[in-house]
Amino acid sequence: MDKKIRVTVWNEFRHEIRHENVKAVYPNGLHTVIGEGLLAAGDFEVQYAWLDKDAEHGLSEEVLQNTDVLIWWGHCAHHEVKDEIVDRVQKHIQQGMGLIVLHSGHFSKIFKRMMGTTCSLKWREVGEKERIWTVESAHPIAQGLPEHFELPHTEMYGERFDIPTPKDVVFITWYEGGEVFRSGVTFERGYGRIFYFAPGHETFPIYYDENIRKVIANAARWAAPRIRKEITCPSVKALEEIKSK
Image 1 (cartoon, one colour):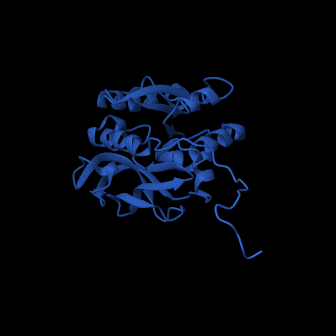
Image 2 (cartoon, one colour):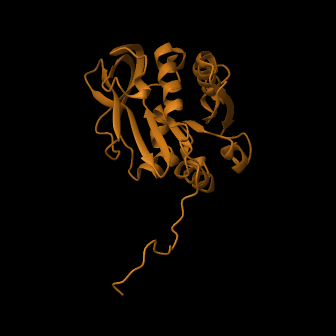
Image 3 (tube, helix red, strand yellow):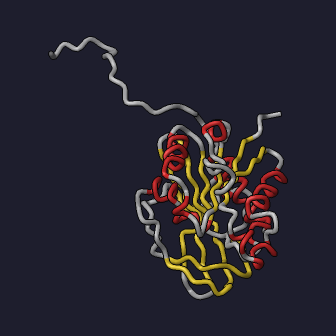
């Protein structure tokens, strides 16, 4: 049997504790529902980390060394994530660890760091319908997904989305109110792969949806390290004799 992909699902885990309407949908936290979807796929090992787990937000050097793909969900406490932890996560991504950023994680310190932009967007929360279009059906993240699928109630995220030009735009969303959004995009930084996926508001049962779970599982497989290697800037000797001195 092939070695399983080691995934760490990180969540602020604040809304589920403080707000009954969120707890009603995700009683044990969004992270556990996301993890359950991966475990059901069968080829993942899953561990969980959250903002208040310990002094390092559950993201110690040892945890990250044993993480192939980090999934990030944050919303109300981006500013509380310590900069030294962001530095650590960035280093591991550049050395080959995959990163999947979900929904409001677009404003997380780590996503902004990796994008180098504000990552701002439009938003509206009225529970409207979302139709997600698969625009790159040959991409590994789109494997097994229909041409389009719908979520009955969601939070709208609209353009302009202030991100660099993605490597791939895999999904585009249309919202009932009329906006469109690049809802599934990929990037590469150093040896690491990054996927941002917009659907997933905390008061809607989006992470129970089978298509959403398939996207996240596919993305975790795609983002798993191809190589895990420190990036250096060495001075090197010439391979051939240089005669033009």
